[in-house]
Image 1: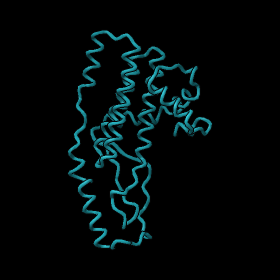
Image 2 (image 1 turned 90 degrees about the horizontal axis):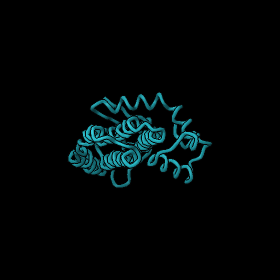
Image 3 (image 1 turned 135 degrees about the vertical axis):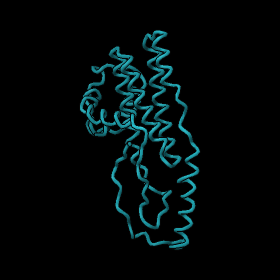
Image 4 (image 1 turned 60 degrees about the vertical axis):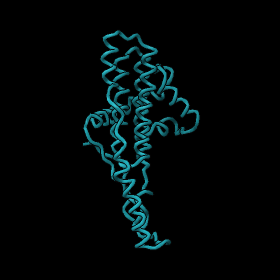
Length: 212
């Protein structure tokens, strides 16, 4: 369930400011009771997603709107949900930090980072950037943990190993869909002409993605 719809239907600027604040700074349940209640209601789906991020591969099909529209114009709106999911883990991490559980908070930030790395496997540049944004969000939450919680040298060394993984490679973006998209567009123009009939549609894609 989307957080904005769970809190009195509020999706305005005030809620967005609250979500940003609670994803970057430690907080207590008593100060944000609605968000705390939402996190508790989403424990099972968040657990499923966490398990998914531990798998090596991520896949979400890229489908065109209709047979006369280039694959480069495909809807990628499902990644808006991925951003919300990653933010939810950071919000939960900051709640744990506010309760004194720095180790639990750190683990939640790593889920956001893993989700970002999974999404970076996708074939388009915009999807890659969404993944990088999630990794950056996890780094902001980790910065808050390091500033707010006492960390022993031993714990710091353990956490450092969590950050040793390099950023996902970017070369595949230009060798797959970005290059294929140009060819796809040329084929559409050659086949249907410059003013094609868009009445022939393909089935709509569900808001879903999968790990494997």
